[in-house]
Amino acid sequence: MFSVRGVSKHFENRDRKPFSALQEIDLDIQAGEFLSIIGPSGCGKTTLLNLVAGFIKPTTGVVLKEGVEISGPGPDRTMMFQDYALFPWLTVADNIAFGLGAQKLRRKERDARVNHFISLVGLDGFDKAYPAQLSGGMRQRVSIARALAPDPDVVLMDEPFAALDSLTRDRLQEELLAIWSRTRKTFLLITHNVEEAVFLSDRVIVMESRPGRIRSVIDVAIPRPRFPEIRVRDPLFLNLKHEVLDLLGGVTRAAERH
Ligand SMILES: Nc1ncnc2c1ncn2[C@@H]1O[C@H](COP(=O)(O)OP(=O)(O)OP(=O)(O)O)[C@@H](O)[C@H]1O
Image 1 (cartoon, helix red, strand yellow):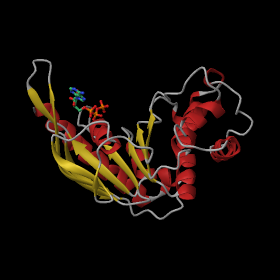
Image 2 (tube, rainbow, N blue to C red):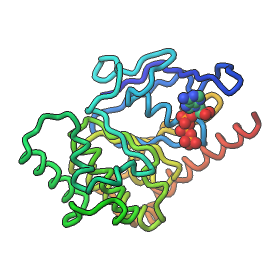
Image 3 (cartoon, rainbow, N blue to C red):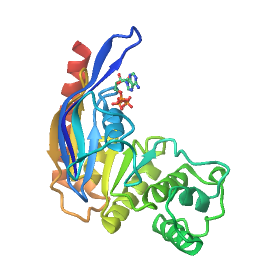
Image 4 (tube, rainbow, N blue to C red):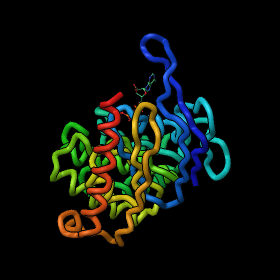
């Protein structure tokens, strides 16, 4: 569905000198795939997500969707952020409806769509609540619903669970997997959490920094559905987790030598 071809992205640093945030990125993303990106701080994960979202343009190379160059943001690519990014003055239902944006829907259709996604994320009965009345986990469910409501092809997630406590985070990972398997959208997730990346993904992209590059792509051949206990029991899960941790350890040591 997406092809990132020979992409580099240069920014200017504080002394106005150009530096390379991403260098020579080649990546294909299949429709319906759950892909995670992991890597040290500053290796260009968000930059890569922003390129796919169409918020920024590559300095060299192209990002294609179904063979056509991405020239800007679109409702086919929605985003989910760590800090919820919900409007505090809108109810849960209105926050989700906001995701439908400019789509011309009849009131009835819009309400039905919003209710469908409220149910999908397990927030029945909270449609009239305001974000301040919800826990962090519930707010993030609203964000998931809002990202899915416009029926995008891909949901781009920038560390969506980083601010949550570990129990809520585990629970939301399980729910996100269930939602993904029901909707079969393409999910592209940035995370700093190795366990989260392996538990959720079909493939884990491990990046390195200075310049930001893909160090390795790990196939996660753990059958689905995946049950929560694999995180502590499944030998394949534990092996893959250690493989990613080892790669990141190498990446961090290399970054420290710079
Ligand atoms: N608009 C910008 N202008 C200048 N520099 C930028 C800009 N956006 C990102 N950078 C720089 O590019 C590099 C990569 O940033 P990016 O946010 O993509 O990294 P990241 O891997 O997502 O980091 P983190 O894990 O800390 O969120 C960093 O050095 C960052 O300071």
